[in-house]
Image (cartoon, rainbow, N blue to C red; front, side, top):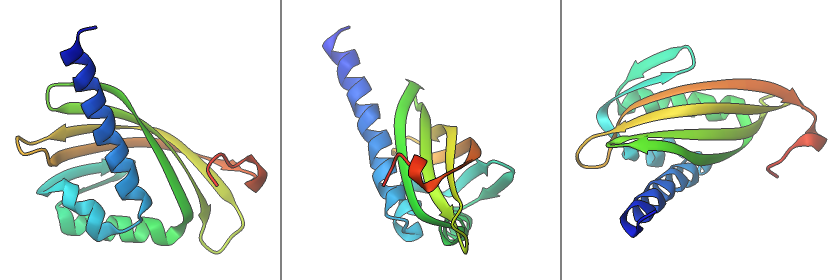
Length: 135
């Protein structure tokens, strides 16, 4: 592998980890700044557009998903697109039940580096608190 290819892989991996770090703040105002004003999202069965909708979605998500902790990893990339794998754990609001979500995201960026499209698929699995990976 040549140095340029290696540096490109590192650049994309850093971009994925930056997204992970932003999401782990659980701050919708901060997270939404990585997206275009007219960003288009599909998150499981929810489809919506724009930063205001992203903020609303994330606020509702993190209200329900308590003690949220996310890990993202670069899966692949081509041109202005990245595929990422993720796992996150959370406790459902008002309960002692923990879940682990495994999934994939497809991202497309504009020429300035903002995400235009985000397509997420994930599966939630009930887990015991003792089985948590991210504490």
